[in-house]
Amino acid sequence: MKTHATPLHRGRLALVIVLLGAVTAFAQFVLGLPTPPELLFAWLGHLLGLPWIFNLVHALPWGLDAYAKYALLATAYLLVLAAAAAFALWSARRRHGALARLAWALGLALGGVGFVLMPLAGLGPLGLSPDNYAYPPLSALVTAALLAAGFALAPIGSTHDAPHETDGARRRQLKTLALFALAAALPGRAARAAGDLWQKIRGLSPEITPTKDHYQVSKNVVNPRLRAGRWRFEIKGMVHEPLVLTLDDLKALPAVERPSTLICISNPVGGRLMGNSVWTGVRLRDLLERVGVRPEASEVVLRAADNYSDSFPIDAALYEETILAYLQNGEPLTPDHGYPARLLVPGIYGMKNVKWLTSLELVGEDHQGYWQKRGWSDVAVVRTMSRIDTGVATPTGDGRVAIGGVAFAGRRGVRAVEVSFDEGATWEAAELKPTSSRITWTLWRYVWKARPGDYAVSVRAIDGEGRTQDPTPRPPLPDGATGYHRRKVRVV
Ligand SMILES: Nc1nc2c(c(=O)[nH]1)N[C@H]1C(S)=C(S)[C@@H](COP(=O)(O)O)O[C@H]1N2
Ligand SMILES: [Mo]
Image (cartoon, rainbow, N blue to C red; front, side):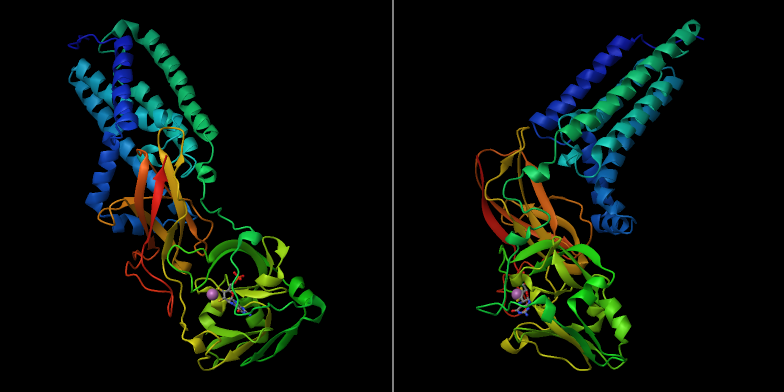
């Protein structure tokens, strides 16, 4: 077989790959330019329409949606590589050996930046961090597979060039392949060693709020101090069989444990009247099943030892996550947080999460609770909110800085968080820390290359139904505050 290819040897090919990789890396890390696969990603997102992608992503089961952004981006890198490979094979067929190698080198260089260099630098493509989105193992796997396929298929030392040398060439290919597979596994390790940036961002709320730091609100000057031995909890009203429980009775029932975010309806934009603790208790649903709710019942009324009361619809009482809690972060409730037992209902403002509980009554008409009589919302569904926690950005050690905060949208969950540096004219996507459930707040962070100075940063969240946080500034009374949190962030 005769070849028309200009000889371009293995060594030169490696040089081309390294050079192209270096140029791309320079553009990405030093100049902050997106790589071609990232541009492709952005363009694909634009073309397909992001809401469509979001819907697709949120249909994914088993929490896979948390990896979706990464998967999309990885797809873009894969597409670039696939295109390069296809072109390389095509030109090899047509005996344009040099062109084939060049295309392949380009593909490897670009893919290499995305899959090898960026994880090595502790970054994910598009600024996604590798400790998020399971980047390192994925990157190692994908890189290994790609390079293996690439070197097996690529027209390097192929029969077109040297038919008599096929065996030696194959062996060399295999060796190179093994080396690349090894090299591909390393970035994963390196990236993992880079540590968890979430923990390093100074001022960012921890995912779980320690009890001592959890906000505390009540109508009382002096909160009730109840004794466990004397405590009784009564379920009555429109039920088939009323029930009275002691604390021991309650603790003997099957318990569930889960983080749940509480936010006070009087929390102003940017305020601190919210927290996310792990609560343990008995599902209210189980108790209601036991007493048998009569069909006329429409609401549950909760009453407490401090003459407080509030109510919510049966629907909410039957949520899987609505519990009668007696532990906060694994410890018995403190007196201020409602010892010995309180209610936790997701997605409804704190005031309906009654502390120092004494009874639950099933009723057939609307009940006006303590705060409703004073003009506060009765529905009290949590509004979508987001907050910037960091007044000073944290250097990440790679020439960039990180800021972060929390976002919450009750039971709707948080789909996205965006930050703006120009008073809301343009918005950039922040990274989200995957959460274990929709009823907790979501930590977000934004990492960028910034010059020292003061930045006016705004934040907004998009809820799980695709609705953007309400931008209109409103005070907390009567339905909860709205408007975007804006704050000065210093980069030193
Ligand atoms: N019995 C009783 N429960 C109550 C209150 C109260 O005054 N009395 N305040 C409510 C309000 S307004 C809020 S925001 C939450 C606060 O719960 P926390 O103090 O555990 O954060 O408790 C709610 N439960
Ligand atoms: Mo509240």
